[in-house]
Image 1 (cartoon, rainbow, N blue to C red):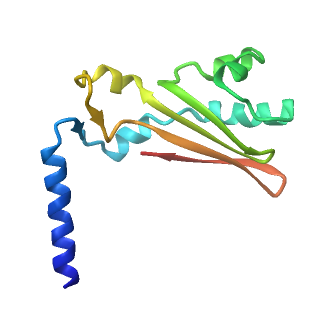
Image 2 (image 1 turned 180 degrees about the horizontal axis):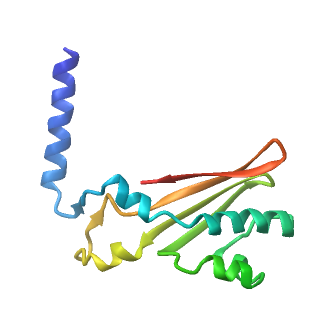
Image 3 (image 1 turned 45 degrees about the vertical axis):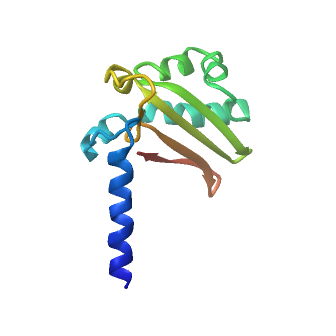
Amino acid sequence: MKRLTQFFIGGLFILFFTACTYITIRPRTRSNIYRERPSTLLLERIIDFRLEHLGWPRSKQDFMSKGPKYYQAFDGFKYHYTDFMIVDSNKMIFSFSHHSKDAESKIPAGMIDINSYHGWVTFYKVNDKFVWKLRMK
């Protein structure tokens, strides 16, 4: 019975994605995703910002306006959308999406790319030291 249910759900899933005309899926390999990660320099500069200014940056503009060291950290950053979500003084989530390669792919207007480059970084404190964990999709 369980096997039949899994087969039925899988069939519905395939039917759903083949019937929709506004969703596209482009396969990505792990090495492609790995190459499109944000630089570790940027992530370390966000931690430096937290330690020097005693608070997390509220936006990309706030981060870049604090000096050339922070402005240069975004050099080569390939994502057009960023969000700094401050949870508390010891935790922040930095998310990014809208990669330049996704914009170049010429997906017709009105279509959604399920497999676009995006991800988030969680910054948190462990034993009086700030660390980060990167997740990419």
